[in-house]
Structure formats: C-alpha cells, structure tokens
Length: 380
Image 1 (cartoon, one colour):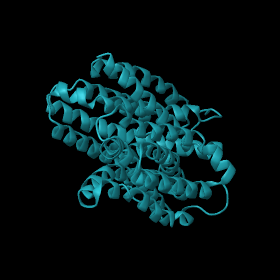
Image 2 (cartoon, one colour):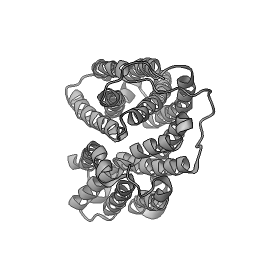
Image 3 (cartoon, rainbow, N blue to C red):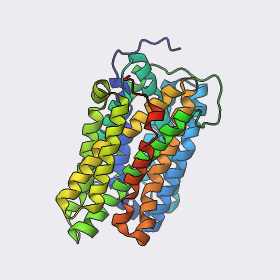
Image 4 (cartoon, rainbow, N blue to C red):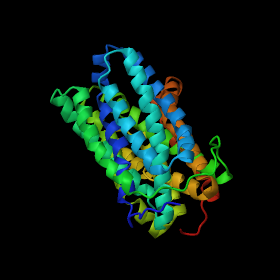
C-alpha cells in the first residue's frame, strides 16, 4: 500500500493522459514531412507504422512485469521521458533505419505507458469511489484534437518536425507533476503472462476490440470516404468527418462520469452501442455531406466511453489480477485499432467501401448481446 497522501480529486491522473494525446496527435499530422526528411516511400511509412504497432503490443505485457517490480510513479515518470525522447528521434529521422528504430522504441514506450496510466486511473476510481477513466480519456481526446490543430499551424509555418515535436514534448513534461501527485497502485505479488482471467474480462476485451475497431476505421477512412463517395474530388471539407467525430468524442468523454452516475453503466453502454451503430450505418448509407457528418458525430458520441468503461469494468471484475485484466483489454483493444482499417480496406475491393464500412456497426451489434454479462442492472 502507498503511504503517500494522494489528492482528493482525479486531475493529476487525468494529466497523465495528456502526453500521449499531444505526441500522437502531433506526429501523425507530420508523417508526410517525416517521410520526406527520411527519404522514404509511402510503403516504407506503412511498414514503419506496423513496426510501431508491434512495439506497442510488446510493450503492454512488459508493463505488467515492470509494475510487478516497481511502483506506478517511477514507471510512469521513466517511461514518459523515454516516450518523449523516442518521439524526438522519430521527428529527426534522416533515414529509413532511424525511422524504424524510432517507431519501434516509441511503440514499446507508449505501450508500457498506456498500461501504467490505465492502472493508475483504475486505482484512482477505487480510491475515490467514482468514475475516473472516462474523464481521463476525455483529456486524451482533447489533447489529440488540440495537437492536430497545432500541428496544422506548424505545417503552415514551415516548422520542421523535430522543432515542432521538441516544443510539444516540452509541454508534455509538465505532466510529470501529475506523476508525482498520484497514489501508487498496489503491486501484484508476482508477474504472470497477462491473459483474460474471467468471462467478464473476455467480454470487456471483446467490447474494447469492437470500439477501437470502429475508431480506427473512422480515423483512417473518413477523409478518403468523403472525398471518394461524397465530394468527388480533393476538398478541404474531407477533413470535416474526422473533426466532427473527434469533437463529439471529447464531449462524450467529458460527460461520461456524469452519465454513469445518472443512468448507470449498463444503460450507458447500451446507449453508446446504439449511437455507434446508428452513426456508422448513417455514414455508410449517407447520400450527402450533411448526413455523413451527423453520422460521424453520432459515432463519436457512441464510441467515446465504450473503451474507457471496458478498462474500468475489467479492472473491477478481476481485482485480484488487475494488471492482467488491464493489459489484456488494452492489448486486444489495440489489436482492433490495427485490424479495423486494414479489414475495411481489404473488404472494400469485394463489397465496396460503403459495404465495408458496415463492419464496425455489425460488430457493435454482436458485442451488445454480451453487455448483460459484463454489468448488471444495478447502478454503480
């Protein structure tokens, strides 16, 4: 047990979710500039993104090992500094080799950091006896949205990626204040290979997979869909779909704790699935830009709280093996984030892009049948 005096609110924990939002929201916009500086092709950039994903999937179980031996604070502080350094290496990559090394290191460090901060947030929920994770992910979404806007301004000002990311990481280090104000989560007695430990954790992982599957599809395919199916040519409005989705994600996550308190977790999960299904279906069938934007907004409100809630519910369902539950749901959820865009791309050549975009709503319908297993009618 920690002997430190933890704050009576969740803001230090929420602060921990700002750095990954700022870093990934910034560098994703600078990918073309980083590729140009490294003299690599589009296919090489795609391979680097896969290397980053592989590093993330390896980093998540490594977090369980680290949190077994060390307290939450030193792990979070050390890995945050390493994540910042890795992103700078990525921003200054001058060759394909450097790009791959930096992407792998960023993947590993961000994977460890993700599990660490989710563990800290789950512990904060127990300590404060109220929802915290939805607010944490609201901070992440807001940071990502702000970072993408700032990155656009940096591109317009011809600021090189390394200088841009150096400024961003200077700001992210402010989050170290949050690291030293959080309460250390209890450490497991021994390290075990992370795996779902109960039926409820499996269900939480399935819902998390479906949520991030849909989020990945919208992130990677919204601009392309609007350009190819609605606008017909390159147009600044092709970015409006993701923007409306991201704004509604921030709104939904900001209201998450309040909604849980008022209507309960079960009803919020069901409402989230309904909004996600309606939104995704509206996008796939949209005859014009207005309907598509309404669909993206609905999907953003629906998907906003699904993944954070699965982390929270899994951690409570496996209290004796909290690290296993969080790592398992995080890893399986992230797998959905990776597979979603690729699956839609492959299926679009067979059933058209509009048909392929119905996969996320169908997946949400399937996992909706399992919500009763994860959470009862009783409000928290």
